[in-house]
Amino acid sequence: MPFNYLGSMRKAQWGAFRNWTLNERRNVSSRVKVLNAELRRLGRITAFYETREETVKDTQNGSERVVQTVSEVRTKYLVTPGSSLEKLCQAYIAQGGSPMSISMWLQPDEILFSTNNDPTESPDDNPNEVFTDQGVESTPYDQPHGGAIAPRSTDSYGPGGRYAGALPTFPRDAMTLAGKYFDQADAGGNVAIRMDHARRWVRQELGELEHLEQRIIKLMDLREQLMEERDTLIQQAIGGSVEDLPNPPDPSRYARNLHLTRLVSEMDGVFYQTNSDGEPDFTTTKLGTETNPTGISLFDTLFDDPVGVDPWAVG
Image (tube, rainbow, N blue to C red; front, top):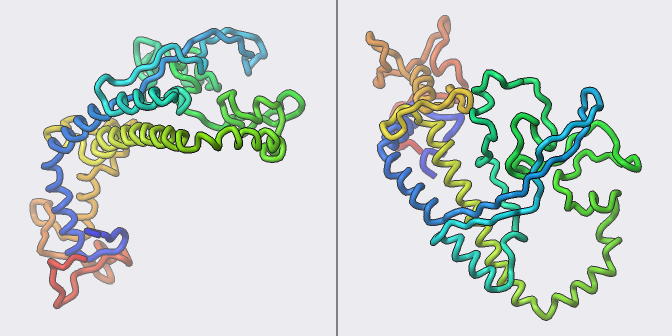
Protein backbone atom coordinates (compact mmCIF):
# COMPACT_ATOMS: atom_id res chain seq x y z
CA MET A 1 0.00 0.00 0.00
CA PRO A 2 1.50 3.38 -0.98
CA PHE A 3 2.42 5.66 1.94
CA ASN A 4 1.16 3.08 4.44
CA TYR A 5 2.72 4.81 7.43
CA LEU A 6 0.84 6.87 9.99
CA GLY A 7 2.42 7.51 13.36
CA SER A 8 5.99 6.36 12.56
CA MET A 9 7.96 7.73 9.63
CA ARG A 10 11.33 9.00 8.40
CA LYS A 11 11.97 12.43 6.94
CA ALA A 12 12.10 11.01 3.41
CA GLN A 13 8.75 9.31 3.93
CA TRP A 14 7.09 12.53 5.07
CA GLY A 15 8.63 14.47 2.16
CA ALA A 16 7.42 11.95 -0.41
CA PHE A 17 3.86 11.93 0.91
CA ARG A 18 3.88 15.71 1.36
CA ASN A 19 4.78 16.37 -2.27
CA TRP A 20 2.42 13.75 -3.63
CA THR A 21 -0.65 14.87 -1.70
CA LEU A 22 -0.07 18.55 -2.48
CA ASN A 23 0.28 17.72 -6.19
CA GLU A 24 -3.00 15.80 -6.06
CA ARG A 25 -4.81 19.13 -5.69
CA ARG A 26 -4.29 19.61 -9.42
CA ASN A 27 -6.82 16.87 -10.07
CA VAL A 28 -9.61 18.37 -7.97
CA SER A 29 -11.46 19.87 -10.94
CA SER A 30 -11.67 16.61 -12.90
CA ARG A 31 -12.37 14.65 -9.72
CA VAL A 32 -15.36 16.83 -8.81
CA LYS A 33 -16.66 16.62 -12.39
CA VAL A 34 -16.52 12.83 -12.25
CA LEU A 35 -18.33 12.81 -8.90
CA ASN A 36 -21.06 15.09 -10.24
CA ALA A 37 -21.47 12.98 -13.38
CA GLU A 38 -21.70 9.80 -11.32
CA LEU A 39 -24.29 11.36 -9.01
CA ARG A 40 -26.39 12.38 -12.03
CA ARG A 41 -26.14 8.85 -13.43
CA LEU A 42 -27.18 7.26 -10.13
CA GLY A 43 -30.08 9.62 -9.48
CA ARG A 44 -31.96 9.65 -6.20
CA ILE A 45 -35.13 8.49 -4.52
CA THR A 46 -37.13 11.12 -2.66
CA ALA A 47 -40.20 10.57 -0.53
CA PHE A 48 -42.57 13.35 0.53
CA TYR A 49 -44.41 12.99 3.83
CA GLU A 50 -47.73 14.07 5.27
CA THR A 51 -47.62 16.89 7.81
CA ARG A 52 -50.14 17.07 10.64
CA GLU A 53 -50.74 18.86 13.92
CA GLU A 54 -50.21 17.04 17.19
CA THR A 55 -51.03 18.02 20.76
CA VAL A 56 -48.10 17.51 23.13
CA LYS A 57 -47.42 18.36 26.75
CA ASP A 58 -44.92 21.06 27.58
CA THR A 59 -42.16 19.47 29.65
CA GLN A 60 -41.59 22.75 31.49
CA ASN A 61 -45.05 23.41 32.93
CA GLY A 62 -47.23 20.47 31.85
CA SER A 63 -49.50 22.59 29.65
CA GLU A 64 -50.67 21.28 26.28
CA ARG A 65 -49.73 22.90 23.00
CA VAL A 66 -50.16 22.13 19.32
CA VAL A 67 -47.06 21.49 17.21
CA GLN A 68 -46.57 20.57 13.58
CA THR A 69 -45.23 17.05 13.05
CA VAL A 70 -44.45 14.83 10.07
CA SER A 71 -46.00 11.36 9.89
CA GLU A 72 -44.60 8.34 8.07
CA VAL A 73 -47.47 8.51 5.54
CA ARG A 74 -45.96 9.26 2.14
CA THR A 75 -47.88 11.60 -0.13
CA LYS A 76 -45.54 11.47 -3.12
CA TYR A 77 -42.62 9.44 -4.38
CA LEU A 78 -40.02 10.70 -6.85
CA VAL A 79 -37.15 8.98 -8.67
CA THR A 80 -34.77 10.92 -10.93
CA PRO A 81 -35.94 10.39 -14.56
CA GLY A 82 -33.54 8.42 -16.74
CA SER A 83 -31.30 7.44 -13.83
CA SER A 84 -29.99 4.00 -12.84
CA LEU A 85 -32.25 4.07 -9.80
CA GLU A 86 -35.31 4.73 -11.95
CA LYS A 87 -34.56 1.68 -14.10
CA LEU A 88 -34.05 -0.53 -11.06
CA CYS A 89 -37.24 0.75 -9.42
CA GLN A 90 -39.19 0.07 -12.62
CA ALA A 91 -37.85 -3.49 -12.70
CA TYR A 92 -38.64 -3.91 -9.00
CA ILE A 93 -42.23 -2.72 -9.48
CA ALA A 94 -42.65 -4.92 -12.58
CA GLN A 95 -41.84 -7.96 -10.41
CA GLY A 96 -44.48 -6.96 -7.86
CA GLY A 97 -42.28 -5.12 -5.38
CA SER A 98 -42.92 -1.72 -3.82
CA PRO A 99 -39.90 0.59 -3.41
CA MET A 100 -41.72 2.14 -0.46
CA SER A 101 -41.42 -1.15 1.42
CA ILE A 102 -37.61 -1.17 1.03
CA SER A 103 -36.89 1.91 3.09
CA MET A 104 -38.33 5.21 4.30
CA TRP A 105 -35.65 6.91 2.18
CA LEU A 106 -34.93 9.46 4.90
CA GLN A 107 -32.26 11.97 3.95
CA PRO A 108 -31.14 14.05 6.93
CA ASP A 109 -28.66 15.93 4.72
CA GLU A 110 -31.65 17.31 2.79
CA ILE A 111 -33.62 18.73 5.73
CA LEU A 112 -35.20 22.06 4.74
CA PHE A 113 -35.87 24.92 7.13
CA SER A 114 -39.46 26.12 7.25
CA THR A 115 -38.24 29.59 8.23
CA ASN A 116 -36.89 32.14 5.76
CA ASN A 117 -33.42 32.03 7.31
CA ASP A 118 -31.16 29.38 8.72
CA PRO A 119 -32.01 29.39 12.47
CA THR A 120 -28.32 29.88 13.34
CA GLU A 121 -28.41 33.14 11.37
CA SER A 122 -31.69 34.42 12.80
CA PRO A 123 -31.53 36.98 15.63
CA ASP A 124 -34.88 35.66 16.86
CA ASP A 125 -33.55 32.13 17.39
CA ASN A 126 -33.81 30.81 20.93
CA PRO A 127 -30.65 28.74 21.59
CA ASN A 128 -32.30 27.24 24.68
CA GLU A 129 -35.33 25.88 22.84
CA VAL A 130 -36.02 22.28 23.86
CA PHE A 131 -35.62 19.51 21.28
CA THR A 132 -38.12 16.63 21.33
CA ASP A 133 -38.76 13.62 19.09
CA GLN A 134 -40.92 16.00 17.03
CA GLY A 135 -38.06 18.50 16.67
CA VAL A 136 -38.42 22.10 17.78
CA GLU A 137 -41.58 24.17 17.54
CA SER A 138 -39.95 27.07 15.70
CA THR A 139 -38.38 24.85 13.03
CA PRO A 140 -40.61 21.81 12.35
CA TYR A 141 -39.14 18.79 10.60
CA ASP A 142 -40.04 18.11 6.97
CA GLN A 143 -39.15 14.41 7.30
CA PRO A 144 -40.28 11.88 9.93
CA HIS A 145 -38.05 11.78 13.00
CA GLY A 146 -35.87 14.55 11.61
CA GLY A 147 -34.64 12.31 8.82
CA ALA A 148 -32.91 9.84 11.16
CA ILE A 149 -34.10 6.79 13.08
CA ALA A 150 -32.59 6.60 16.56
CA PRO A 151 -33.23 5.08 20.00
CA ARG A 152 -35.53 7.13 22.19
CA SER A 153 -34.12 9.09 25.09
CA THR A 154 -36.20 9.26 28.25
CA ASP A 155 -35.88 9.45 32.00
CA SER A 156 -39.38 8.22 32.81
CA TYR A 157 -41.59 5.15 32.48
CA GLY A 158 -44.55 4.81 30.15
CA PRO A 159 -47.90 2.94 30.36
CA GLY A 160 -47.72 -0.20 32.44
CA GLY A 161 -44.43 0.88 33.95
CA ARG A 162 -42.44 0.04 30.84
CA TYR A 163 -39.22 1.97 30.33
CA ALA A 164 -39.28 3.36 26.79
CA GLY A 165 -35.58 4.19 26.60
CA ALA A 166 -33.73 2.65 23.63
CA LEU A 167 -36.96 1.83 21.79
CA PRO A 168 -36.78 3.14 18.20
CA THR A 169 -38.47 6.42 17.37
CA PHE A 170 -40.56 4.85 14.59
CA PRO A 171 -43.93 3.35 15.69
CA ARG A 172 -43.73 0.10 13.67
CA ASP A 173 -41.41 -1.67 16.09
CA ALA A 174 -42.90 -4.96 17.37
CA MET A 175 -42.09 -4.16 21.02
CA THR A 176 -43.75 -0.76 20.66
CA LEU A 177 -46.86 -2.22 19.04
CA ALA A 178 -47.15 -4.97 21.67
CA GLY A 179 -46.63 -2.54 24.53
CA LYS A 180 -44.21 -4.90 26.26
CA TYR A 181 -40.91 -6.72 25.88
CA PHE A 182 -41.12 -10.36 24.78
CA ASP A 183 -39.15 -13.07 22.98
CA GLN A 184 -40.32 -12.75 19.37
CA ALA A 185 -38.88 -16.13 18.36
CA ASP A 186 -40.90 -18.01 20.98
CA ALA A 187 -44.05 -15.91 20.66
CA GLY A 188 -44.19 -16.06 16.86
CA GLY A 189 -43.12 -19.66 16.36
CA ASN A 190 -46.47 -20.97 15.14
CA VAL A 191 -46.91 -18.09 12.73
CA ALA A 192 -43.34 -18.44 11.46
CA ILE A 193 -43.90 -22.09 10.50
CA ARG A 194 -46.92 -21.16 8.41
CA MET A 195 -45.16 -18.23 6.76
CA ASP A 196 -42.18 -20.44 5.93
CA HIS A 197 -44.38 -22.92 4.06
CA ALA A 198 -46.22 -20.07 2.33
CA ARG A 199 -42.88 -18.76 1.02
CA ARG A 200 -41.18 -22.00 -0.02
CA TRP A 201 -42.77 -22.31 -3.47
CA VAL A 202 -41.68 -18.76 -4.48
CA ARG A 203 -38.12 -18.79 -3.13
CA GLN A 204 -36.65 -18.16 -6.58
CA GLU A 205 -38.92 -15.17 -7.21
CA LEU A 206 -38.23 -13.79 -3.73
CA GLY A 207 -34.49 -14.16 -4.36
CA GLU A 208 -34.75 -12.18 -7.62
CA LEU A 209 -36.77 -9.48 -5.87
CA GLU A 210 -34.23 -9.33 -3.04
CA HIS A 211 -31.39 -9.00 -5.57
CA LEU A 212 -33.04 -5.93 -7.10
CA GLU A 213 -33.77 -4.53 -3.65
CA GLN A 214 -30.12 -4.84 -2.61
CA ARG A 215 -28.97 -3.11 -5.81
CA ILE A 216 -31.32 -0.19 -5.13
CA ILE A 217 -30.06 0.12 -1.55
CA LYS A 218 -26.41 -0.06 -2.69
CA LEU A 219 -26.90 2.72 -5.23
CA MET A 220 -28.52 4.96 -2.62
CA ASP A 221 -25.63 4.18 -0.24
CA LEU A 222 -23.13 4.95 -3.01
CA ARG A 223 -24.85 8.28 -3.61
CA GLU A 224 -24.32 9.20 0.06
CA GLN A 225 -20.67 8.18 -0.11
CA LEU A 226 -20.02 10.25 -3.24
CA MET A 227 -21.73 13.28 -1.71
CA GLU A 228 -19.68 12.83 1.46
CA GLU A 229 -16.50 12.75 -0.62
CA ARG A 230 -17.44 15.83 -2.69
CA ASP A 231 -19.02 18.02 -0.03
CA THR A 232 -17.13 17.03 3.12
CA LEU A 233 -13.86 15.15 2.62
CA ILE A 234 -12.50 17.30 -0.22
CA GLN A 235 -13.82 20.53 1.27
CA GLN A 236 -12.35 19.75 4.69
CA ALA A 237 -8.95 18.89 3.23
CA ILE A 238 -8.32 21.57 0.61
CA GLY A 239 -11.21 24.04 0.54
CA GLY A 240 -9.92 27.55 -0.10
CA SER A 241 -6.52 26.38 -1.34
CA VAL A 242 -7.42 25.53 -4.95
CA GLU A 243 -9.15 27.49 -7.70
CA ASP A 244 -12.08 25.08 -7.98
CA LEU A 245 -12.86 25.40 -4.25
CA PRO A 246 -12.07 29.05 -3.58
CA ASN A 247 -14.00 29.33 -0.33
CA PRO A 248 -12.30 28.10 2.86
CA PRO A 249 -14.23 25.52 4.94
CA ASP A 250 -16.87 26.92 7.26
CA PRO A 251 -15.21 26.83 10.71
CA SER A 252 -18.56 26.01 12.32
CA ARG A 253 -18.63 22.72 10.36
CA TYR A 254 -15.00 21.87 9.67
CA ALA A 255 -11.97 21.76 11.96
CA ARG A 256 -9.35 24.30 10.83
CA ASN A 257 -6.53 22.20 12.28
CA LEU A 258 -7.43 19.30 9.94
CA HIS A 259 -7.02 21.30 6.72
CA LEU A 260 -4.23 19.93 4.52
CA THR A 261 -2.29 23.20 4.44
CA ARG A 262 -2.35 23.37 8.23
CA LEU A 263 -1.24 19.76 8.58
CA VAL A 264 1.60 20.21 6.07
CA SER A 265 2.75 23.39 7.79
CA GLU A 266 2.81 21.70 11.19
CA MET A 267 4.67 18.62 9.97
CA ASP A 268 7.16 20.74 8.03
CA GLY A 269 7.82 22.66 11.21
CA VAL A 270 8.66 19.39 12.96
CA PHE A 271 10.92 17.87 10.28
CA TYR A 272 12.74 20.85 8.74
CA GLN A 273 14.76 23.85 9.85
CA THR A 274 13.54 27.20 8.56
CA ASN A 275 15.57 29.62 6.43
CA SER A 276 15.88 33.37 6.81
CA ASP A 277 12.54 33.86 5.06
CA GLY A 278 10.79 31.58 7.54
CA GLU A 279 10.28 28.89 4.91
CA PRO A 280 11.20 25.23 5.52
CA ASP A 281 14.66 24.21 4.35
CA PHE A 282 14.04 20.77 2.88
CA THR A 283 17.76 19.90 2.90
CA THR A 284 17.98 19.98 6.68
CA THR A 285 16.43 18.07 9.57
CA LYS A 286 15.29 19.68 12.79
CA LEU A 287 16.99 17.29 15.18
CA GLY A 288 17.09 19.38 18.31
CA THR A 289 19.69 19.04 21.06
CA GLU A 290 19.82 17.73 24.58
CA THR A 291 19.61 21.26 25.97
CA ASN A 292 17.14 22.45 23.35
CA PRO A 293 14.84 19.55 22.37
CA THR A 294 12.83 20.50 19.31
CA GLY A 295 11.65 19.09 16.01
CA ILE A 296 11.66 15.30 15.69
CA SER A 297 13.45 14.92 19.03
CA LEU A 298 10.07 15.62 20.66
CA PHE A 299 8.55 12.54 19.00
CA ASP A 300 9.69 8.96 19.61
CA THR A 301 8.31 7.76 16.25
CA LEU A 302 9.75 10.41 13.89
CA PHE A 303 13.26 9.80 12.52
CA ASP A 304 15.97 11.29 10.35
CA ASP A 305 17.04 9.31 7.28
CA PRO A 306 19.72 6.73 8.19
CA VAL A 307 23.02 6.91 6.36
CA GLY A 308 23.18 4.53 3.40
CA VAL A 309 19.40 4.29 2.91
CA ASP A 310 18.00 5.24 -0.48
CA PRO A 311 15.91 8.40 0.16
CA TRP A 312 13.59 7.41 -2.69
CA ALA A 313 12.75 4.08 -1.06
CA VAL A 314 10.02 5.41 1.18
CA GLY A 315 8.28 2.16 1.98
